[in-house]
Length: 471
Image (tube, rainbow, N blue to C red; front, side):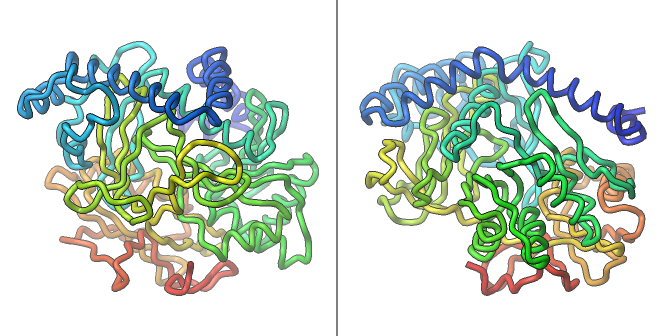
């Protein structure tokens, strides 16, 4: 029996015990003294002169490039082909000498990007969501994990949150089995002072329980997907209530203006949106000025380029390209994301010297509604797709409450067993009330607007709005 299934079949007290045991394991690997030291340096450096920050980036780039050349088969081939030696990369100003790294290359040559064996102590495995393309298999070293948590915590400090404050979390982990019909629909991580609320039980009749639990615990900070927090916020406003918070942190989806306004009104606070991804080369976060997102320049080096890979002038929109400044396990150097933004170098009124980017343009998505009225954010449904490298592209279409069409563009090695596993993973999150129809198609086109909608739901619900009019 898998650990996930054992967890789902255990009583609440045992699930809480396992959740906290897992949190202790994470605490040892990704937090502790290295994390506290990294956070302290980040807070000290965020207002430093630009030349000091650039000098740090240069040192980190030289270290990552040297490790890549000496230990990665892919980078040795590429650099030799282009006649580039580690000594030729003196810092960020020389990165242009190396070609862009694409998702396709990471997918096809992931093993050759590695600088060692995957059993190396401290290495951690991860995946991208794989919604608009097949998931990427990724590896991080311990320092990358520590820095990821440190830059995340720095933004929470910007939002007024301290180490002793508790956080209500509305993300995609199945902390409460979706088949569970009785409360509590949350679990408590005491190690990190977090209350994890289930994103799979947000039926109208259950939302009062969520609101009461938030109030009972006196939570003043929330974090989650915009679409999930939007569901809670709309419920709060429909009930004529307010649920005062000090800050709300959102990520993983485009935060649309209608969502920001609704969440701000319901919780009476500002929203601190941040941008990051599983590749861990770019992290950008809103400060209290809410005028774009500050790049965590100590985490990664970011470029903005056009379709041909050429840098675009500041203020013009282009593709975000990131270089990890820490990951020696699987270096991603000049990795081109599929996201669009523009660079802002004018000083921010907050006084931090970190460069900003404008809001990141990504795909718009909708919400799946189950027959029993639960509203499920699209981001929580990305998780079942992550293990399947054979799925090139996917889309969920809901025309009826009891039916979900799952379109996939798959490679030839996508087997019937893979389809059964995908079906099971989706059913675990959606419940048995929805019939899943999985259909392989040749391609999944974009909308006329050019946007790619991973979830298309035509089921009316209390959080519906017309995507074509969303800002």
